[in-house]
Length: 136
Image 1 (cartoon, rainbow, N blue to C red):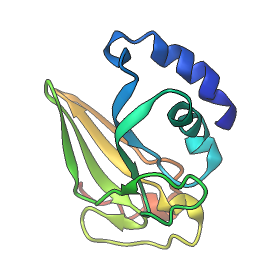
Image 2 (image 1 turned 60 degrees about the vertical axis):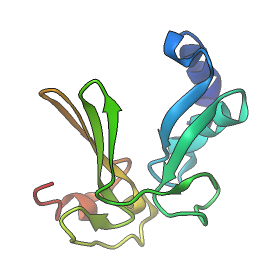
Image 3 (image 1 turned 180 degrees about the vertical axis):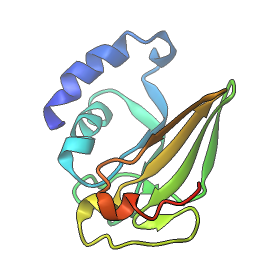
Image 4 (image 1 turned 30 degrees about the vertical axis):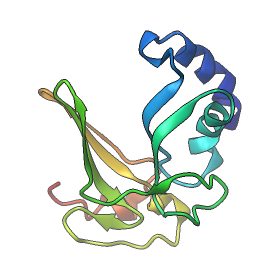
């Protein structure tokens, strides 16, 4: 949420690993202010990001930051943690595509793994994007 920036900043300020106020990776799931507003506030008020990903590249709506994430992009976060982009802007990792006429379907989907822990997040993807997901 756009009004969550202050609360998020207070939280981040208390994380020792972020004492330098640099976040290595940031992902804006899609171009709705309820998904990037707090992030926008953080990046405008004292924090920077090494890499900012979004779903759609340099013409990314009102957020206007970062580069388009590539489906299949894998980031080793160290210590056994990894993030894999399994869907972005209507394209799934298995090659299937779906309509992005509804802005929510531009959402980025990430598979986050750490040891035996697996977490899939997909922004605000609608049913049309969830249906053809297949095997990632």
